[in-house]
Length: 178
Figure (tube, one colour):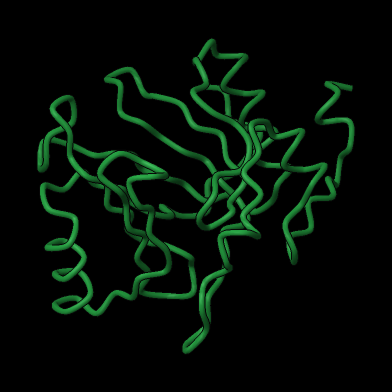
């Protein structure tokens, strides 16, 4: 068995489809003690989304409005795995490509500003390997939306880091395949 060239650090966050976004946010905040870090309105995503935290990670749970294709309670939106460095994300993308795994997205998402590669398992579950999610201390607020810098490739995300995110590669040859 071939060992991947990166090490998963932890299950980073779970994203769920929910029938009623407000009701689910209330449950996770009022019953379980999560805090809202960010939210998307209809202008950003049909039905909206909410990102909640229970520790310094920007989000441990993300809630997405269920749709006809993805009904509430029927499944996961995605499962995310944290790695220790931006180099690991680049290596993960290369490893996935070597194994002919189609990649849905690589770059930087908005809320949380993590640099990620997103793909699917053989049963079509959405998976994410990421690094650099914002950390929010007690009493602190999430990074404002104008600082998110969404990027549509790892190369773009690495070349244009967000404030406080060191995207220098330990091995700069990773991006060039050298």
